[in-house]
Length: 322
Image 1 (cartoon, rainbow, N blue to C red):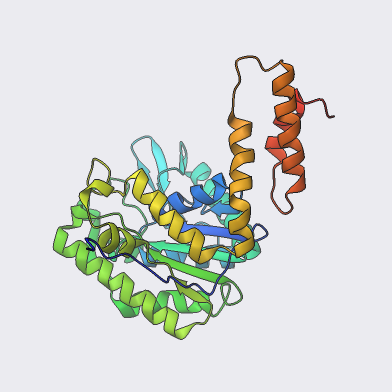
Image 2 (cartoon, one colour):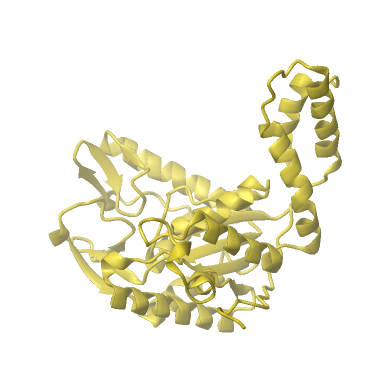
């Protein structure tokens, strides 16, 4: 007897290997996948302006990176004793207005470099609900706990989402592999019915983009949690975020569908080297540990296209090799 329906036959056009330069942008779930990739020594960079939840802000941020735009002074506001940008996460916060402008410009410059050099861009959409800043009549990435009266809340339409990404997919992203996902994080503060409507809107918009552009794929992280796992055991204590076990399950599907067969075969070897470098023995000066480090130093040096510079530096401290 079957007691659950499992996601099967996920097929992505894009294939990632250890030479692929990946840029990840979007909701906090984008960071979950990016961290798994980083832990396994893939070349991945996160959006330098931080977590972004809605498609309009993600698209405008990518456009700002692509065009190397300067910070909009109207979008930098004071919150208590710090200055923050309505276009960025609160991780960018400075004590003066000028420093905030400089921080945004640095982030845009870095974002331009990372986006331009990337072969693959992973975009995770969190919610279709947005807040428009009344003073500038534009969607914000973060309200920064400013007065609610400063904003108007509304849902994006499918057309708005599609139209927001079209210039990017016909411009800076046209020659890159693009993987869209919908975050399985439940935005229950919007309301359960509203969260359901939001996720459906995101999914329909991505389906339209996949139909229009051959370099666009969809990875069903949302469906893996809500339809395959489908149990509160696979959520964290807040009943909002996927549990560690759920993220691991999603990662296993991502490996099978998004990585090349060569990259998949390398994963166990890479993990052994990474785990070996994190191992701390009782007696690091022992002959046994020197031999251990020498063995894994050799193993790391034999794996091509993987940056083990930190691990090799560690192993050299204790091995007999210089």
